[in-house]
Length: 90
Image (cartoon, rainbow, N blue to C red; front, side, top):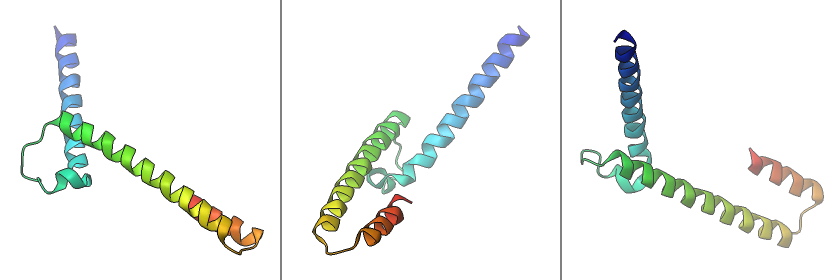
């Protein structure tokens, strides 16, 4: 019986930690941030987090491609190009 209690206590702690982490995600999401006091389900927050990360990844890819195009069309030396690329990799 004592092992059941400790197991149940551990899962309750994990549930509380998950709820806390999900609530920390909410203000980071532009689509949900304006609804600070509104009730939004944890699954909605997690779904929006995944969508937001996908959008950010696409934006990074698009910007990287645009930067490559600009570097290809610019009149810069190889040393300058390497320096610029290193700066953007940080």
